[in-house]
Image (tube, rainbow, N blue to C red; front, top):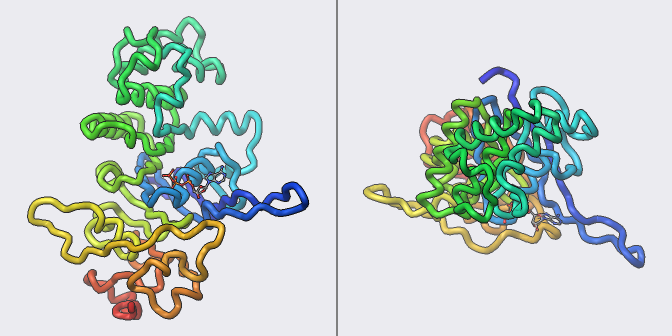
Length: 341
Ligand SMILES: Nc1ncnc2c1ncn2[C@@H]1O[C@H](COP(=O)(O)OP(=O)(O)OP(=O)(O)O)[C@@H](O)[C@H]1O
């Protein structure tokens, strides 16, 4: 990975509402994403996990410029994307592509696969028209489909094949980053692994980076180099994948991992079962947004919002009392050990 990250997000915030409606009344502000910062290196996969409604998709849409953020910065290859218009925005769209959960909903049912896959060539004026068919056949083969599929319509394919078509469409412009929003959640488990393996092999052959959004920890663990855990619009922990799964530091991460059954001799001896539900994004709790559900909350938690801070190389946690008692060799931050309630 080079020093400059491919994607650098700083303080990204997205609020909905807050508009003045009829009779001069303002609609409530819904804080979907709050002050999120993250980096993705070239050829790297950052997995993003969290409960439904925590803001993962909104963050993905703001990064890929499908939604305008309320505040913050999104730099791609060092260049600010927020505020880009016209040709500049179009050029950026070639570099960052999106894959959605529902491949059927995102593929035009009235168009053939050939027409769906060559659309980007037309819009971006790529390749002479006479070459489009050959290019589409190449793309189909790249994602494990057949040249004969070119004249078929999306409804003639299985869910896994449709997701392969979505992946092929994302590849048409040779992007460097793909924001994949729950790309395998609608698929059977056996098909999930085929699509994940395809994405991983394309990553190697095309040097792709992924921002991989999923609520499924097994899937994220399989594909990610690093993981960001989101809670209530914020990233509460980021870490290399293995370190996160071996020893979660944020109580929320621990509770998420506790919900995944362990097999064989590895048992969940110290399970942390999460109580309650996500708070209302219209009426956020004071202090740490996780404190109403946190069994480890201490005095500061209801009044002071914790910063996302580095607690060891490569690990960032937003918690006043991260669960360091599980860890060894953390002399740099002893003041947090044992302070938890
Ligand atoms: N266009 C919108 N207008 C208003 N509120 C929205 C809009 N899009 C998302 N939200 C709200 O923002 C919050 C975050 O939603 P988002 O879809 O980003 O979460 P998520 O973690 O991706 O959840 P899921 O996995 O269920 O899609 C939710 O409270 C949602 O209701």
